[in-house]
Length: 169
Image (cartoon, rainbow, N blue to C red; front, side, top):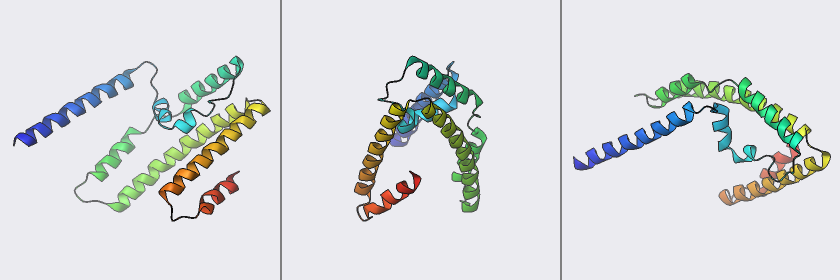
């Protein structure tokens, strides 16, 4: 009984701490869902690291990102809540989960396409020399990712990883 009480208290405290942190983040003056989501993906959030940008380029990129943030629809909380209810249901309904996941994935595709447009506009602001540096950095990251993927899947020939990227270049 003591262990159960301790576990309940610990989980209550942990949930309380998470809720207070979430409240701080959500109530922040400059908070936007896209900012919180983009910070998770370090490859995207650091796309221009190592590129020496002019102040004009920096300002134009800030303007593009600010415009994109305000035009992007907020994360659909009701869809996430629906998925949670499906996952925690007494009886698992694979078809309902699949349909919900596909619906959520389609919303994510729309967001990714919009952000790809913005990143393309930002790329076009670069000089040809800056674009060449960025492309070289991309090749280095892809090599690193292939190495990591190969370590995690040693039974897969390396050609599988490189063939899909060749068709995209």
